[in-house]
Length: 387
Ligand code: AKG
Image (cartoon, rainbow, N blue to C red):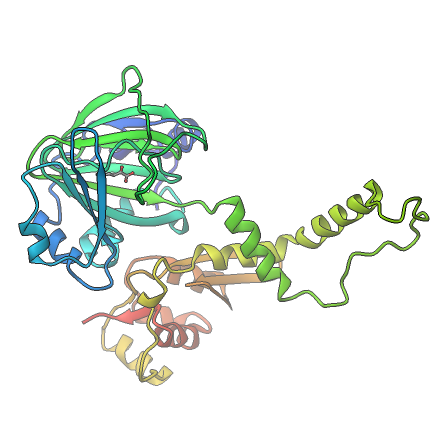
């Protein structure tokens, strides 16, 4: 784990504490040489290959003229798609490359000063000269690491929710984009730009080998949070728990919905929702839901505890499956390990060990309840022996 007070080259020699206090979710930070002498672990052909795989989320963004119009197509693509493309002004974007390429997943370890459950995915783009996805905003925090070639980034400041966006395409391209002062930089391999949510940005490839790695962090919206928490809690609420108005004053107008009634409903909803323990249980579940539910595949032939023990003792390491999400929490009622949208009670030591991305080895079996829980997580597709 990172030490909050140790300066990191990745953060331009800021400590994680300084970065989080002054930049995270607040303002952009350009870091020259964030990863010195960085060599991309993936090349454009490998990225294009991934974009041809069924089940991999990939987009091709083409700019048909100097100012658009823009065209977006979705993968899986094939060789013919890439053969018809012009020399410039297009971008290939592949989501969740961390789920398919272990060396890209390993990049996340650089960011371990942030909770892993905040990670959305690692997207990688390739673009020939002039390629971009247009000036846009995202509702995510993102670290844009230049993997190869050069990209010019221009920033347009924090945008409001109602900034006009181009209609008719499924990209959030801004109708107008004004570059802010001192916000125009060309990034070379190893340079990185951090952007908070809602910050207008426009990145244009300058070279024929431009690859950019976007390490994106998600935060659920108010809409998603309220709907999802209400659904979770709702399943546990008895039908008898209802709006009540015992002792109310007589109605003066039979059709009126008076302030006292509205206030009673407000209190009823707030008191019903304000359950910190249930909220924590919901939060752990929702933040570990897999990005792609079909990537967590239960074993066709479930494994037994004895087989698990034998494989670990034979020296085979066990891993979190790509795309699986783990988090844990302890409170007065004990420890919960959250995995792929479910909660499991176990010891804190076991929860910490399984949430860590380092390979799991036989010593884990010394922890109480380990064999049973691990077997269950293998059978649900969240942990696995590779190879
Ligand atoms: C983002 O991840 O927000 C980007 O703007 C990346 C765009 C790109 O790589 O072309």
